[in-house]
Image 1: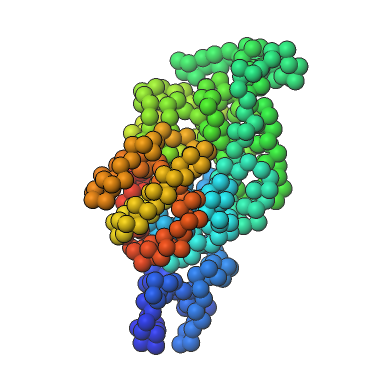
Image 2: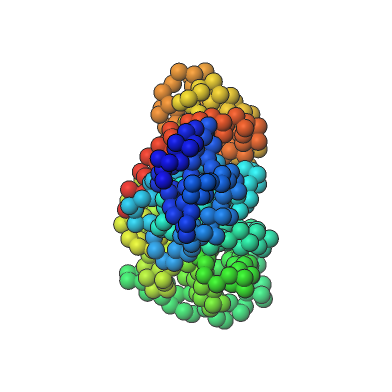
Length: 449
């Protein structure tokens, strides 16, 4: 079939990994002038543009429908460009991780001007193109409203990360005579816990403080869970308490999990605020031994109250943490990445068009204050020597934490101001971009395997 098609359409190159037969027709992807088309037929053919292909594909091949991961180890591959997924697929091959290929937050969607459906459609197309049949998930990341959840459900998502951080209170603001906390005190005060060398008892004050801090957030988690479960049967449900300045203590872990279970919220995973700093795009900042000690306590609690996965957010490039994370948890964990694949896009530009790359950096520096407002980073624009970037080795450039973080947070303004040219460059140099993504993400997966 391939040779017959090529003779008939010599300007098109078939992506051989995509070739499949359904009923009497062949389905495959063919490329012409850096544009991809879904081709359907046998002797005579339909050519369908990439943007319109996914609805046909998912209605034809069931392996292209997203599914839930359950308690299996899983890895989140955020793709802000919509063309990094081929690299993610190659990195995931042969690993023990269930891939969450479609993963975007409402913040990312707003800045990239995409929708949940567009993100999933891109993943479906690339999974078909590169022959991925091993299943994948679709994560509506850091959802803070029912409206966002509704959009993700309509788009077919299977993983919902609830972010109630806006409703987590600082305990220093607490009034200990708050009567609304009394029901929690009655329920939990006096309960003792022993986790093999680590034990504690809930006092009135401890319970009151935990309830003040987390109860309103858990109320929103329940509201979100009820909203989803009324509309969907099989899904992953993650509770995220990591985007706060309050570290999640073992006592808080116990309180949160007991409340979730009391309310019959069937959660798949939970993301804690660990000690140290998990900044975007760079390695962990902090004492690994302190992190390990805390993680061991969380693991002991999980052993008693599980099953559920412990999730690591801002997981990109935390290479010093991965060996400890893997060794302590072993099974049932989830890691999220996103911005690091975007960084590989800008690295690709730095290789193929240094002048354009410097233009992007200058724009990112100009918009740094706006872009950094919603991210936890320590990058300093004053430490970026733009003149030096003209001739510096690309690997040295992207080993600089200032460059990495500034690029990481600037995707919205870069796409808004330079999106058309950026995509032209990336599509022309797609093999290099895919190579960079695969190599970088594979490093993450290998350290976690």
